[in-house]
Length: 232
Image (cartoon, rainbow, N blue to C red; front, side):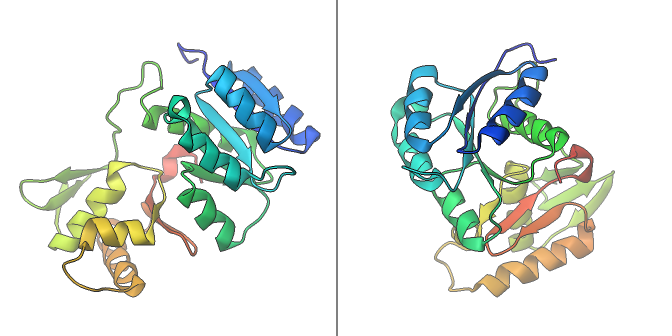
């Protein structure tokens, strides 16, 4: 049980989904607010300042993408976590949502256990997890001084770019890093490279670390996540 009663705002035009999610979140001890469209959701967010907003993409009056942009423009809401809920699987939705400033992307139909686990992980990542430590502990540890990774006591020496790529993904477990974001932070302007360069480096890291850590979000980017987090 969390020590702090976190506020969750659900914004969805489907009343059945609102009730279903509200019931399961309240059962976990969250304080829940509901809105049936983006316009009402934005007004309620400004009034209540929730810790996290679950935001549907396809809604009347103001869709989720535009709502997210407006949320991120409000100074009082800059630290609010936004996670998109949508039944759409198109790459466009994922890219647009993440570029609008969303912290996560959850596909419908939503499984309550998965949703609760992901919400708690997002709250911990933002330092709002009650008694959870700020530093996220992972199975793989980065040794900055020697440019290597340590997995279960085994030292894995990595070339510079593989090391920097892994370090970036490990900096925020669960966060999806967009391709252009990875290129900018790992390669910068020192050389012109394409998306295939990232794919090759990810493949090499998987060969050294195993398949259970680095995940592809099709058409969007990559993230570090551990299977035992129950977030997949």
